[in-house]
Every structure is written in C-alpha cells, then in structure tokens.
Image (cartoon, rainbow, N blue to C red; front, side):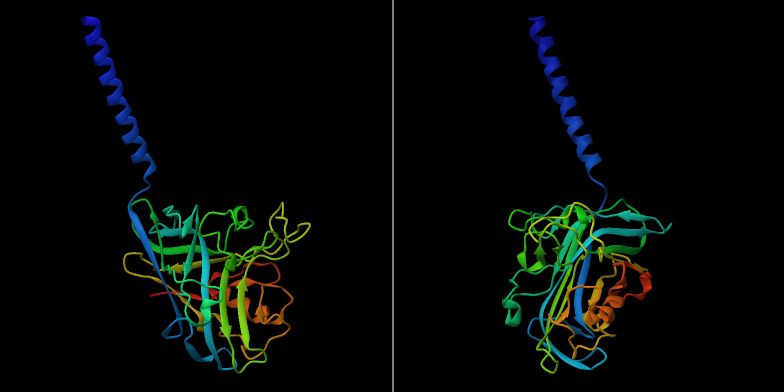
Length: 291
C-alpha cells in the first residue's frame, strides 16, 4: 500500500513539474505586450482607392487612375527612448505575416485592380515587443534574400501571391503600384520595386548569393508612437520628382533596372541609390511619413 501511495505522489509531482515547465516556456516565448502598427495609403490628401482618378502628380502634373497598391515590409523595429532599435516579433497569422515579413494590401480587386488583385485588404502589422517607451519606427521595404526567391506555388502566405512575384531568379516585387496614365506617352506607368542583378542560370533558378542590387529601402520615422501614430504611404510624395507623362524605354514605368531613366527619377523617392540598390540617406525618401 505504501508503495502505491509513493507512486501516486511521484506522478502528481511530475505532473506539477510539467505544468510549471509549460507555463515557464510560454512566459519565455512571449516577448512582451502586443503591438499593432497601422498603415494607410494615400495620394496627397486623398485616400488611395482602386479606379479613382487623381490629378497633378509628378513634374508633369499628370492625371492617373490607380490599379494596384501593395508592398512588403520586413524587419520592423521600434526605437526605444534610449535610441535602441527593438525588433517587433510578428504574429504568425498564416495570411499577411510570415517570419519577419508582412504584406500591406490596399487594393480591393475592384475596377482596374480586378486584373491582378483580390478583395482582401490589410492595413496593419501586428506583433509583440518588450514593454517600454518607444519614440520611433524603422522598417525595410522589401523581402530578405533568404525568403526572396521562393516558389509562389508552395510558399506560405503572404509569399504565395503570383502578382507580387517575378520569377525564381529575381524574386518578389517589393512594391507594386500600377497606374493608368491617359495623358502619357503610354497608357500605363508601373512601379515595380524589387532586386536586380540576381545571378542564376535562368529565370527558373534561384540565385545562390544575394543579388547585386538588393533594392531594399530602410525607412526611419522619428517621433513615432504606435499607440498614437500610424504610417502613411503617399504615392504623390513618391513620384514628386517623376514625369508620369513619359516612358522610356518600355515596359512602361520602372521595373527597378538601374539604367532605366524612369527608375533614376523614381528611386530617390524610395531613398535608394539606384547604382548600388541600397538605402542612401534615410531622410531623402518621400514615400512614407507618420501621422
């Protein structure tokens, strides 16, 4: 009888220890309080909407109609009061966020967006950060090399969208903004930001090493507090130095090629050095601001 009681006590102790270990593991796995970072897409002082017409953009005061507006964000960090960049651990939601990458989607599949878009929308990034006071935000526009050359037919969401992908060799379109330009030399002006100079045997082969021009832009917004502010992506600011009535050469707009004259005027809006495909001076970008 004593042996049975002893065995029962041992079992209870082991179960208690197991619960304690699970609880400790869960507490360790939790980084800190939940945080939500809101985004918005605008064209000047107007919301960015599929099929909506806008006037007076760029150096040519161009009229455009919006047909797509999506971009990938990665490596999100909040800046502490001490100036330290603290990573935001993204919630793995199986839809908009995977590892350290999130897709912001402002097209709803209506009007001209129906060709490549869908009805799903996403205007936020969610995750966890250690508790503290934060006074800024830093994030990359792009997909890290380790995830940039997946197969969209087997990749997890949101890296499984063909419209945001070129091929295995080049990888993803970090930014896709499609415009119709009725007054332009060509009827469309596409903004497709992604890596170039990616060495591989062909388009169906991923590169073994990072691309020569990564074209990943690092954005820093000082004074940002996620409890009170949100991030604004402004197309009018991005194309302020671009003549959208011109297209040289085809395809229309900028496909991130360093010798494309259209890219030369567009890349400063992303804060990118077009020759090297890296961030130049952070405050030169004109695409993002906080509100």
